[in-house]
Image (cartoon, rainbow, N blue to C red; front, side):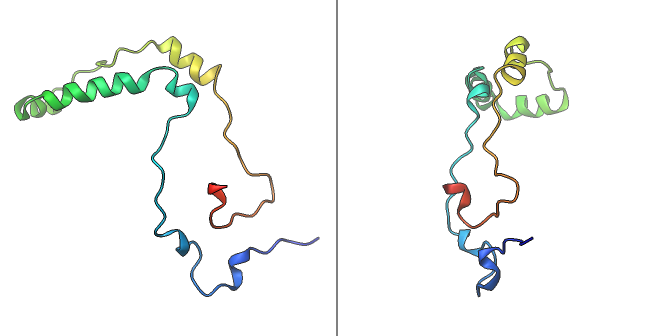
Length: 103
């Protein structure tokens, strides 16, 4: 019965301090969500929001309009309950080390 020891236990610098300057890649929607077309709908709504004047934005905060995004909820249901795929997970007992997510 042996327990694996993490590599960083004897290092002089603090744990995960080597990742400080590393740029994170931008978040990308999973394929099954991107297939619904939600990105296009959201970008269209955000463009309309940019065109509004300050007075209209303040009015919208005081009296918000609900259900502005026109979505087909059956498509969303299928995306999450039919086509959803599990993310890649580590196996039980695997140790985390710096840079493991970049492999």
